[in-house]
Length: 436
Image 1 (cartoon, rainbow, N blue to C red):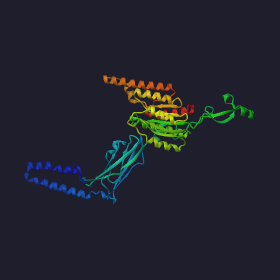
Image 2 (image 1 turned 180 degrees about the vertical axis):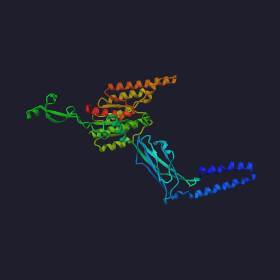
Image 3 (image 1 turned 90 degrees about the vertical axis):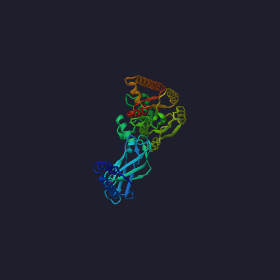
């Protein structure tokens, strides 16, 4: 229990009151004492009317999980046990840096209501913690207030949001959201997997004629093929310190995890096998390729657990270990980024060796800061230096992409808003063209 700000100001009024009475009539100064006694009496009355914590029920209801790029809410409740109306209750919480700190701004449960909601906005994947919750309420006159601190130690997992990512893919690719993951109809006659025989029609490729069966059938029969399934796909994630940079409110790694979720969903529904590989200074995760939609939850669990390290990425170790694990030709989709020339040289050297036996897709997000600085019209010497540095870094990126493309590696550099659509479109093109 403590006096409120209102009670403090009422007591403080006694000072100018005493000075005024002393200036006009010194014998009337004693009225100040009566005024303070009156204030004390009112404070005691308000204290008696302000219910203690033991007569109140408090409740905190947290969401089961929070999604990246979305918002959740924490429901807090306070009510008298006897059902009587409670004066407004102020509520504040303590959160960790996974959540936006605006969640710590107090909210008020209005008089007559029993609950209010606190908006929770996650910044990155991980575990959002709410260790303490403060409830504060006052008496009817607002002269005293009581406060109680709850320690619920809430742990709320923050995970990627497949629904939002699927909607982004819908907007960019033009497929219905519920069809994300379904592969287009098999391409008859253009794949590599035999599916059926049919009568020859003029204009068909004569090389597809099955001469032995045609002799038995006494008519020309041709073989039909469809796009092969059961490809092996590896989602390889660089979790080095460069992936911590935030674009559009979330980290580079989170953008890429979202793209990987949609791609994994599409590949598994299409009949392919999907695995996961993550690395920074050392190999962090290696999940062998799995098939069937039951594997999606398994992959989602590992993807949600990826975290950025503070160390530099060791591409030599990572690509060597990955190549050792792959026993058949595989589609490797590498989500990464780089800045300096040394890193780009190591990337080129190691990815070139990997691309000899596997099809590699190199995915790096476009850097809006570099593009903005390079295109900005300089006004000062400092601006000229920034523009020159940004242009040089962009030149190095273009150079690395060109070198990788000459080694047969597909390079894409979309903006954050177009990443999901670009990755999904390239995957479908690779599979339909039998490039794996």
